[in-house]
Image (cartoon, rainbow, N blue to C red; front, side):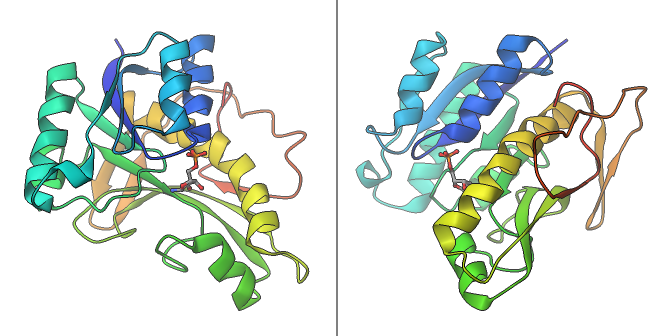
Length: 226
Ligand code: GRF
């Protein structure tokens, strides 16, 4: 049985698209019930509509405070029947009211190797710092920004000539692989949290075909279909 999920976006929705593609190919244990944006002009809404997935806009500016915005989000997600939440480029900080409503059932993707370079400028911050390796992180969401227990990370080389855009493009290709995989693990009931550690229950699945990805390290390794 698939787990009903809501995907929250604020922009282009390329990570959403990666999930829609996996859902269409039948490998994803998630049933995407709702795509919700805080911005009416988010292109991801059109991506969802093209796949016949219900969409909603909850504009943060329409609410007097963060608590009221969070409550409106929770209500819209509950109405959709979703039991888990995927933050795919959702550019608002969620307060304790939201986090406790879906405790241990919210995943976020961040375009850096956490705990390095949290915040909204992960890729340019890493490029400017001169790191030799960067990457992306899928983590459970807790009350602190870019902080919760880590599910999966992918590392890619960073080069001296990289700006945030060049490094970001290399990272994004891996985001599109690890995020659907992490959502699949969550929705399959294979993740458990022990302190800061996320345990992945083993399954009899072959490793993924990583050819064409370029130099990278992904841990835990991707499985077939992802
Ligand atoms: C991604 O880089 C993600 O890591 C960050 O926001 C960006 C969203 O991109 N949180 P998209 O909307 O999925 O294309």
